[in-house]
Length: 262
Image 1 (cartoon, rainbow, N blue to C red):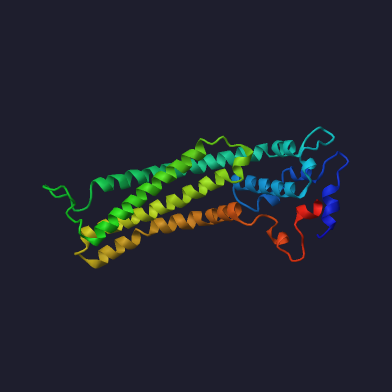
Image 2: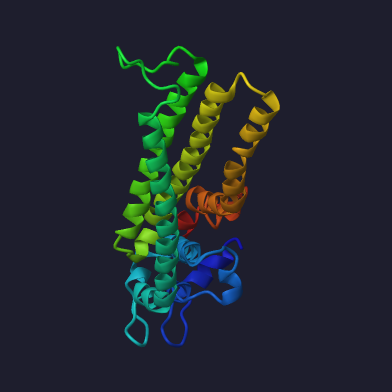
């Protein structure tokens, strides 16, 4: 828009609303549907409000309209229902993933105690400790246990969060991203540990049986990735991306917004 936006950000409505008051209103439904999930919609609304806040002079942030409302008060009032929906969406997702992560942690912990091949009766060392597949089993099982434990902690932190408005901007999405990534890692490494155990147990028998079972063990990883990849990619892009105005700020010949306003 060039220098035209200087006049736009300085204008006010008949009710005394400046551009930041207007940015604090809830976006129409067709704009909210750009991203999926109430939590991500709340995050985008916060990003939009913060972007506009960076364009205006500091005095505009505390300016009251005809009804005595500041831009932040308008934002809180108009987004109250969306924030409640985002809280419910976050808690439902965290509850489901916590159960899955807890089951994985239980399984891999039990597998670490009952190692394949058993232990030596005299020394207590595993009988197959010298096998490469056993080393792979131990490393994968430990990674699965650690990553599932981290995942549980992340989802528990989501469940116990205070759910303030600002938490939807980075804190809650960041925890959910870490939780989903570590949950995926725990599933993948659990399947590697399972495959290593099968190889140690049935490696000398029919190869086609072993190959079919090992191929089947990849299905849970593929299903999880296909179901959650789009959501995870969208959250990462929304949380760590360049921002809503990235294209405008990178145009040649355009000065930064704040510099022109000042």
